[in-house]
Picture 1: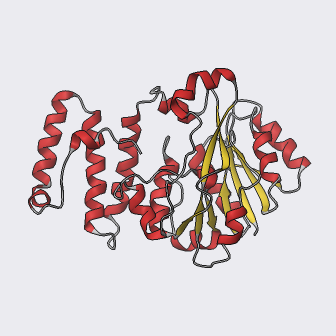
Picture 2: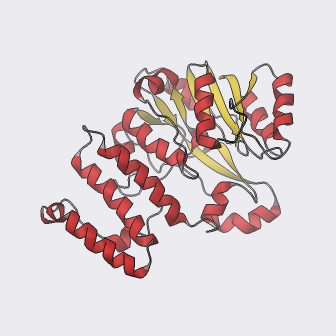
Amino acid sequence: MKVSVIIPVYNAEKYISRAVESTLQCNEVYEIILIEDQSPDNALEICKSLAGQYEKVKLFRHGDGKNHGAGESRNLGIEKATGDFLAFLDADDYYLPNRFKAESILFQNPEVEGVYGGLGVHYYSDTAKEQYYKVFGDRLTTVYQKHPPASVFPGQLGMKGSFGLFSIDTLTLRRESLLNKMDIFFKNLRIHEDSEFFFRLSYYLNLYPGFLDCPVAMRGVHDHNRITEIETRKIKPCTTKILLWKEIRNWSEGEERMPEDIKVHIRRMHQSFEIANAPLLKKGILIIKYLVCDYSLIRNGLYNINFRKLSTQIF
């Protein structure tokens, strides 16, 4: 295997060295692509030092030298990658030695276009653990059982019961499949750009499970990563979910081959988060609006609305 690992770097001077060194321990890694995204700290200088120290490490920045966010930084990394396979790592996370062990076997099958696995948790300080343990605990972020590729997309949508989650850090893709089957990679969303990518990715590519019962990478939890701000309600989760599901809805409505029941489910999820985030009076107006607009679906039994239940679901 020749794996290109893409790492967007922003405000990560404390963590990027560990991320890179954890990647270098994997023999399957062909190159490490750092996309420095106009960090306000000393991350650029550390990236330059790493690129000078290790032959496999390559450093790039956006053409205008400005901050573009994680999604566009990963897109630039995909453009620069030359390996046969693509993997991703957030700059404050790190790989474990078994990161590509399942992948090295699974990708021998040409039908396998992507592999996902389990993600563990590492607290960078006692303060971070004290503050965020109630959010993450010591739980493994994983898909709960092995599913065939055709079940991954509806599973992520919540159409197959309790499915679980996989992470950008544990995803490995066949580069040729990604480039041939998807025109748009990561979108420029402030939050959930990876989740939006996962939805579309699992629709177009055949994704297979790797190690699900043990971690292949670790999520680094500290005081300033974005996910902790969402999980602890510093950023209102319903607001970000509306934007996520709006993107998924817009995409799905343009997919002629997508089954109608899946489109209906996606539209329902988007509407449920809109209602959950609306003031009380507007909630009633939205419910009436959606009931009227989708009356034919309700009448035909295709649209079983339970807004109260849906509004509590967080992907």
